[in-house]
Each structure stands twice: as structure tokens, then as C-alpha cells.
Amino acid sequence: MPTEVYELPDLSYDYSALEPHINARIMELHHDKHHATYVKGANTALEKLAEVRATGDFATIAMLEKNLAFNVSGHVLHSIFWTNLSPNGGGEPDGELATALTDTFGGFEHFRKQMNEAAATVQGAGWALASWEPIAQRLIVQQVHDHQGNHGQGTIPLLAIDAWEHAYYLQYENRKTEFFDAVWNVVSWGDVEARFKAARNAELIRQT
Ligand code: MN
Image (cartoon, rainbow, N blue to C red; front, top):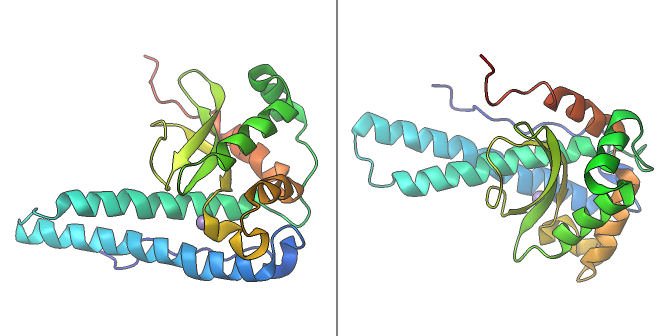
């Protein structure tokens, strides 16, 4: 099997592009160090699982499967997070996404409030995540623990807000709610809308 299944994606903007809302040093460390560690961890977990398959000694499988879930999920959420952000972001969504937010949450402001509350009240590390739930054909907000916990199977992530301390502490210190307020100034609604459009084609339960 190839040794590098997962690769760290480049950012489409400079580290300083999201200032003053997210400073360059946070972006540099967050992308080049933290995200890179999850990519490496995901590849390592796959390699170790290949080894235990080859030897037939599955004594470490529970740990390896946990490492796989943590690191793959970390890679997925960070990859989405970077593209959810843009120096040209901010404002509010329009079109079908705006309509869906109104139908589901009672409007954009109610949605934003729920996302910020979910982010601010994570116990330990986690994410606030807006997802498409294909069975009910509905938007939901989830409070993800670490990268992989407390997450509904089959839901498709649309907008991820990183609530780990590494996402804000160098700039905002203990004032994390200021970070969660500021991040909306750089949300790329074009990216979220494209994800929303694609997600609605997903079919978890096949109609026969
Ligand atoms: Mn992070």
C-alpha cells in the first residue's frame, strides 16, 4: 500500500490573509504543525493496521482504530475549516442556504447563536459543526468532541468552527467568545453554499 494516503493541503491564502480576525502566527502553527500532525497520524494508523493484518497480531487494534478515527477526523475537519474561511468572507448567506437556515433555525442569527454557543461550551477540545443530515434532509448543528466524538453518523460537514485552544489562544487568550464572534467575518459563504448544494445529493438510505 502507498505510505502516504493523506496529504496536507495547501492554504489558498497567505497566513496573514485573515488578519485581524485570525493572526498569521496562529494560521502558520495551526496549518503547518497541528493539521500536519493529524495527517501524519492518519497515515501512521493505516500503516500500523496494515502491519497487524500482516502479522495477525491484533492486540493493538482498539488503540489503532481510535487513532485512525481521531486523526482522519482531524484531517477532514481542518481541510474543511481552511476552505470555509476566506479574506473575502463575512456577511450572510443568501439563496437556498439562507432559506434553509430560516426554515430550520428561524434565521441566520439564530443559527449563528447556536454555533457560537456550541463552540464556547465544548468541554475540553472540539468543534462547532453545521452539517447536512441526509435522512431527514435537514441542517443540524453538532458539538463535536475532540475531532470525532459526539457526531452523528452519515452527516455531511458544511461549516466547521475550530474550538480547540490552538485555534485562538495566541491571539485571544482566555477570551474565546471574542474569537467565535470574529471568525464570522471571514466565513466564505460561497464555499458553504457549494458544500450545501453537493450534500443535498447524498443518499444514505437507497430508495428502491
Ligand atoms: Mn485545529
